[in-house]
Image (cartoon, rainbow, N blue to C red; front, side, top):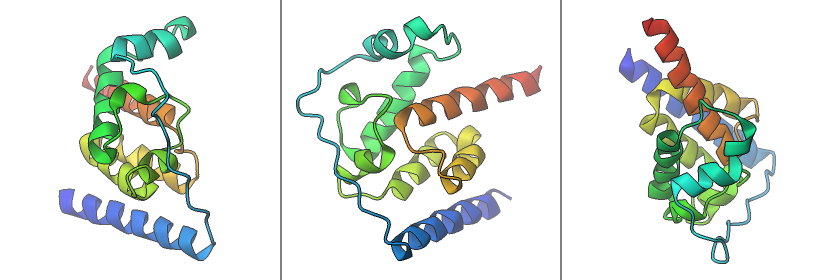
Length: 146
């Protein structure tokens, strides 16, 4: 079953990649973070989520998502922002958005299904989407456990 899911995820990513290529989907301009302040996950939370009252978005989850994106792209985790476009983040290291999403889905398998659905629907485009999907998937898993 695990291999079937992995094969389906890879097939979906390849299909989206080729569909976008045929459609003349524009290449993303690589994200330039050189002038940005380097933030810790705590500062990231305070700057973007503390005032929203979103208690389910925790600093450890933010750290995990930022670290996963940084490890895939080579960008410093502390210079990423929620509104950053995943395609631009990936392009900063010569990658495609589909590669970054595939990487995130392997790091966060609990969110893999929803990531693939949202990507296919064009609703998984920014970094804050990745954070929200991981938070939601973990909340659903906790609710199922009891």
